[in-house]
Image (cartoon, rainbow, N blue to C red; front, side):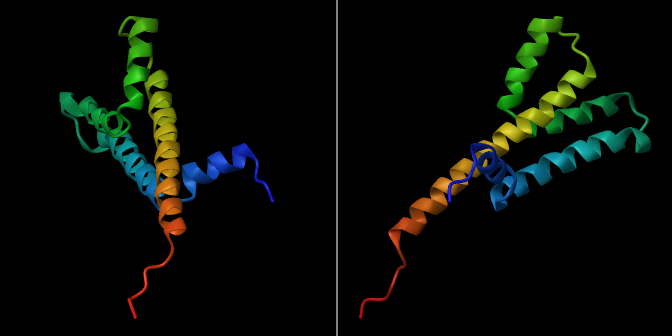
Length: 116
């Protein structure tokens, strides 16, 4: 039975250990960054958003470049938040594809047995 390309992409993006761990890391960084203003009042509090951007790099580099090109460095916050989400999903898909390729290669090799 052949699966649809959309279902395959969703499976690679969400339904494997590597992608799930990566998305949990990025989601945790976004949650900490969103909740940080409730607990800190320092003027450097906005720098916490560097971490989600770094976790989604290099795909987020393209988003930052688009923001610079489109708004001249004054892009709205929704653009960067959406960019973090899209970058995380793109990289999760790539990570899932790499995971599947490595697992598939290992599965084709067969089981290791003792020489007997």
